[in-house]
Amino acid sequence: MKKNQMAGMICLSLAFFLTTLSLAAQEIEARGYEFLKKAVDQVSERNILASIRALQGFKTRNLLSEQKAVNFGIGAARKWLMKEFQKIPGLEVVDDGYRLPKQGNRIVRDTELHNVVAIKKGRAVSERIIIVNAHYDTIAVSKDRKFHYEDVNTEAPGANDDASGVAAMLEMARIVAPLETEATIHFIAFSGEEQGLVGSTLYARKMKQQGKNVEAVLTMDMISNIKAGNGYIDSTRVRVFSDDPNDSPSRELARYVKRVAEQVYPSFEVNLIYRADRFGRGGDHTPFVQEGYPGIRFTEARENYSIQHTPLDTMENLSVPYCADVTRVVLASLLSLACAPQAPQVTSERGAPLLGRGQGYDADLRWKWEGNRESLAGFKVYMKDTKSSYWERVYFAEQTDSFLLKNVSIDNWTFGVSAIGTNGLESLVSIYRMPPRRRAEYTFEEIK
Ligand SMILES: [Zn+2]
Image (tube, rainbow, N blue to C red):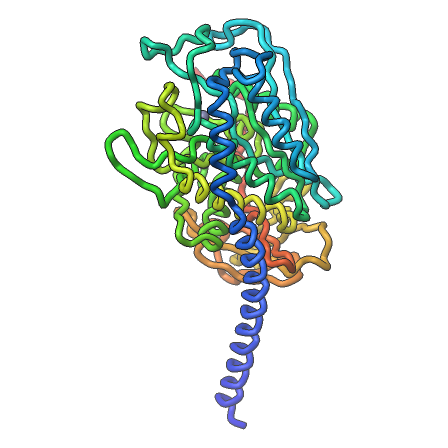
């Protein structure tokens, strides 16, 4: 056999090897998407409609509104929510209550605040938590079109803001509850959002103080309006807001959502907005991001400012089919995260990235992964230009804990690694990031 013939054969068998490898990986991934698709197909517009109608029926859900009435005000809404969650087998329902003294210019008197939490336990031995949330409180301007925080019984139906998010969350809870997940899911209806993200701030702090491992926070706030006040209509996209920088865990969570959701539900587009939230406005994901957890916000593509926070925010002015589409997007993301293996750890105990230069000019990626190897298909190594919005190259790394990219500069690229389960579902991509450099302190005396 001639030398070049031999080389040809090696090339051929290598090509064959790579093809079979990617075929196996593809088959495994197809398994994952089938599973997610089945769940997404269960989303019911009727259920969503019924929930929005019920919540709107309480007339107002202002934090400071009536607590004791049976069918009016925030107290009645909370009791209804608790009951709805309790109807779903497999959820532990918790009344997460706080006493708040009068403070600031929005909490104008002493009050109680109750987040409604429904917990679906995961199987993972060391607890992983995913938080999916919306806020059930509302607010509306008074007759003079201004906010008066002491005017607590003004009609504030909040069908879009944010009964739509709560309805989506209830629907997801119904679909996810009977399934086996690795991660524990906290379905949370927050209160006091309109007074300054109060409920989510208290819960985020609690998670941090208890040292909880919150892997992802998915906030849905206003997910059913399709027509803007200027006449523009968009019913085929949802916006997902994530905070800078481009290699932050929140940004990576947003990329994950786009990749998974558009694959599972291709008729709908996830429009990533590379910004913490809308201009000058906030949401319940932010307190979690401030505690160091990855968090993103889902919001309709087109807002109608003349309806928001007014008595006009009712069923007549929103689209339930659109709300169901957004529900499908969030559900696919949530379920994929919850059933995927835990993400690899790419830092040392002291927080240094496990990324080296190999023989001097290579990218030498290492990671730690301590889950159950039997349900692990392998790892994926990702790479992109530092300026790129999305991952550009991906390599399948099988059951190893390192990967070498020869002559690839670690200075000029961003790298990440994920874990893929035998069920075809992929973890978040863990990104290799350099911790910020601390300012050096020197002893000196200036020469005058
Ligand atoms: Zn809202």
